[in-house]
Length: 415
Image (cartoon, rainbow, N blue to C red; front, side):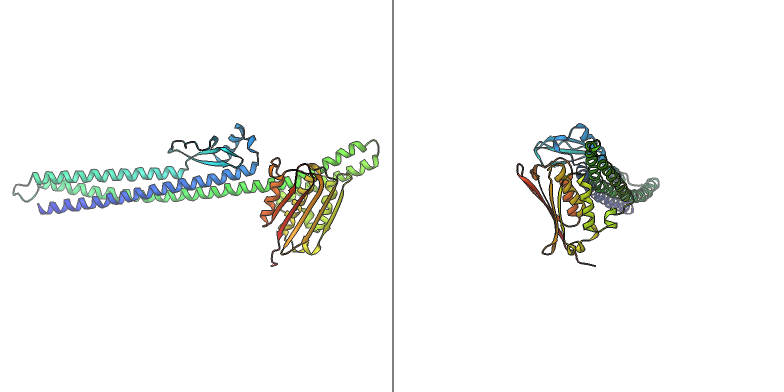
């Protein structure tokens, strides 16, 4: 009987060790599942913020179609709910988070999206480990029952179990060992599959983030460069309509200017497609590029441009700073002509104390920069300044004459 008692004790000890390992694995998998859910919510929050920045649509224009469009971009759904209301009941198949609205404190945007495949895989792992724990408990109960029966049914000499009973127990222990080994190997394979799934998910999130950033950059470049050039061509064509009968020679000259500007716009589009810098910065200096910009935006109107560029300041600009400074100047001048109806514009570029400053000032109608929400002009100027570690300040007041745009750039050390 002592040998059988030792076997039963060893079996109980092994089962307890296996049960402890299963419970430990269950707790670890639960923590990993929570971590993956938190990472998925953080990734979707970043993608949602970038999608909102890409569209740049005011809050009052967030209709059902726009919410569906945002949901399609991030692969989920977007709804509104009152701020301070209780969160919806948790759903094991759906993850949600709230996005605060800067201009509306009475409600929040609730974003819901399906849990990632890795989350389902971790949940499957938890079920497997829980099943293994239940199996271990069942085997432990079976061993205890067999031990109780062995104590109550001793052998003929009172010291040993019958041979058949002992052989059955040994066979069960051998089967338990084989099952434990096979389940351990299966857990290893599932762990490797989970790691590969996590790596694939992270790679896809990086690709999506890069795609959104590229769309935002392309939209900013098209708005600040191509659209403004086409607007100038349109203004020139409008002036040609009035000169067609009174001054055909002047009308023909302006049509030629339109053709030249359109060819330049086509070259800029090709430069954007191939990833090159704008051609007016590659073939001409900064001052000449600004003068060409004035001629393009003038569109045959009687506008006074006062341009003063410090050559020493332009020599300190890097290639990226020159490109973004020119686009910010283009946007500021275009806004002065289109929205401010200015007929006198002053542009200054000079070097200050450890900084380079660009000034664009007009005599047009003022506005309130804090409430300006239409279009992308001011937002694009600030985004371009941030890309080169600069700042943009807009000074203007509604009902007063003149708008002042000041760009400040740091002087970078030469390599």
